[in-house]
Amino acid sequence: MRLSRYFLPVLKENPSEAQIVSHRLMLRAGMIKQSAAGIYSWLPMGFKVLRKLENIVHEEQARAGHIAMQMPILQSADLWRESGRYDDYGEEMLRMQDRHGRDMLFTPTAEELITDIFRSHVGSYKDLPLTMYQIQWKFRDEIRPRFGVMRGREFYMKDGYNFDLTKEDALHAYNRHLVSYLRTYERMGLQAIPMRADSGPIGGDDTHEFLVLADTGESEVFYDSAVTDLTFGDREIDYDDVAQCQAVLEEFTSKYARTDETHDQALFDAVPEDRRRTARGIEVGQIFYFGTKYSEAMGATVQGPDGKPVPVHMGSHGIGVSRLLGAIIEASHDDKGIIWPEGVTPFHCGIVNLKQGDDEADAACSALYKSLTALGLEPLYDDRKERAGGKFATMDLIGLPWRITVGPRGLKNGVVEVTCRRTGESEELPPEQAIEKIA
Ligand SMILES: Nc1ncnc2c1ncn2[C@@H]1O[C@H](COS(=O)(=O)NC(=O)[C@@H](N)CS)[C@@H](O)[C@H]1O
Image 1 (cartoon, rainbow, N blue to C red):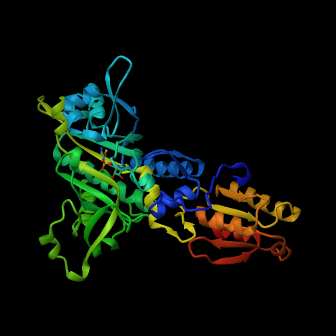
Image 2 (image 1 turned 90 degrees about the vertical axis):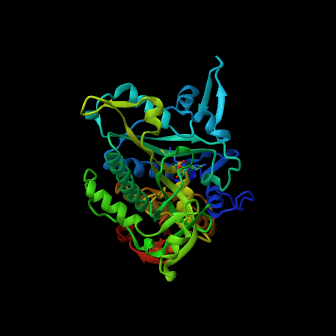
Image 3 (image 1 turned 30 degrees about the vertical axis):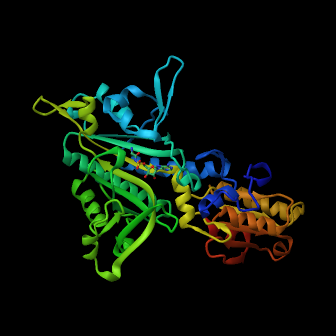
């Protein structure tokens, strides 16, 4: 992409309304623009990152054997009356009436709707196990939306729902989600620690939240520092193997790690003192097992092996896709701006032309742009007639992992300058080697 033809409204100043660094940087880097409290327009570069995150979520859900689909953002109140949550859900639910006076709502989550779809079409235990998920906009009328996309009112969530014949099968689905979440977050350059949590309005008695440790996190957490040594990495796993997935659950949740809602000081005291930590965390996902709470309320049964109707065992599992942009920036930035992990960066490399209009420099930049594009390494070419300092500051702010600087002097020596955003180290290399270095 050429910057002269893009839409990247970077801000020079720190917006006063931003209290945390990710909110400040997303506004300054021209990624989002608030349209109302807790509601944002996703400008081109923010939208590009959002789609990269969404693609990673889709890939890891597919790997786990979960099926993508999509439900509407507006729902009828009828299903929520059936489950009894229409009144329980309280002020966070945005309610409205259509022109015929029918009660509607802007979906905050979708257990009822997916259960209705299931009960309309699935009648036999032979059709189980079944996990379907969507990535869809949600609305929760937060009383105090804040911290940009971190706590919005309209936000993008992956919500998945499993349907199983027995509790054991549903707990295996729970473990499949835990594994897929560990992989998902690591691919985004994040360490998200599974912690025992409270089930809140979703319900159920088994639930873990996934938290990214960050001083600006809203959750207070207590954990054994040994959990921060755990990584899933690129180990192979058979998602259908119950024992393998159970082993991952035990490996990642046997050490003490809890949010303040479920914290148990007596258990925490059993952790060796030098390993006890309290911190703050950003909740980037949550998985739930809630048994037959919705299937009994809504008559979602299947014919069991003995021919008798059985209410299915369910769970729901969410990832805060839009919140993740904030969490990644909180975990990866410096005083000059964002530092995108390579797996989620909007563009792989910036090209800075020190003398736009100089034939040799322009030609070298265009050749670099072509070669990088041919390799699938999306470059953002700053071809504006701007001072070098301004171009460097923009590249540092928007946080691309690599920058290639092209100028007449370097070209006389047959070299360009390659700079790594994370380390700040620069090296002069011939253009071909520069491309090899960043590929
Ligand atoms: N106001 C919000 N703004 C941004 N992200 C949010 C907000 N509320 C929740 N999330 C994200 O959405 C994830 C899932 O939300 S949840 O309430 O925990 N779970 C559910 O709604 C389940 N129905 C999952 S299918 C959270 O872990 C969090 O990362």
